[in-house]
Length: 155
Image (cartoon, rainbow, N blue to C red; front, top):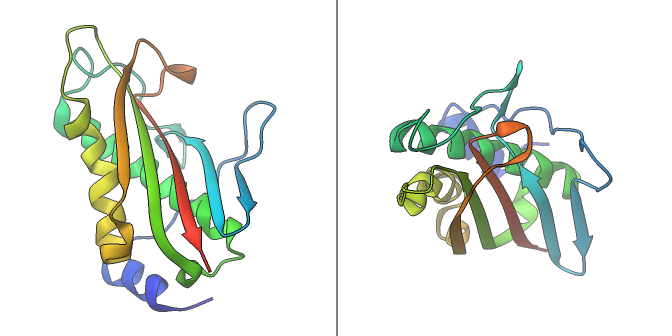
């Protein structure tokens, strides 16, 4: 399907990854009414986990932002499945929750998760602006550096 958002992705040189299969007993997204809830996604690349480790010891803020951006692409891949391939159905992004696998003294979580937030605005424009939380976690599944979940309003 080709629309305004697909054209924007092409303009940005972005190819969405294949949506990840759940690794446990959950579904990748739930559509209820006009909302889509995307389950937590990680920085998965074509060869598996692209960023494994902790911010503050293994990665700096810029590397963390790159991990969050990749993770946001995985969120959008799930979203595309949820809207049957038509990303133009997205009216707005409502909420983004970002978890940062970090050392106890690391306090730059908001700047790391900006990697995901910035991408949402690049792709969806004003409709990509959202409420957000960015929190630290002492560990994340399979040692991923970041995890992002999201809520979108669709039409």
